[in-house]
Length: 155
Image (cartoon, rainbow, N blue to C red; front, side, top):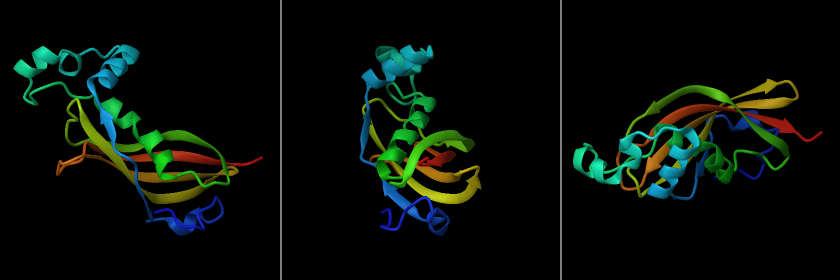
């Protein structure tokens, strides 16, 4: 878990620190359908429940890879990646993403996050986070990703 001395000033001391796990989040069919509506990615393997049961090697619909990836930001905030003295957290990019296992509709996932690197970026701190999105009761994670977040200090 995040140590008591976790702040903008002490971030470099915490490289290698695992911040913890988020709560479990259910990726249900309603969530998948809403993501499809927002993005226009309406592949049958995501939204056609009957066809996916008949034809998919997964035996049902699965979440979009980018839907699972989009969960990392709010789950990292839930874990506490932003020190209390940070004014804002900005997604800065991705260095590497690998989709390891599909997330079936109705599955629960959670994030595990650790700090890989910290560097000064203007007045802020740029963090490289190592993220693993775990699937409940599965040996393989849904994805692993190196994400970059910019923490901005209070003005």
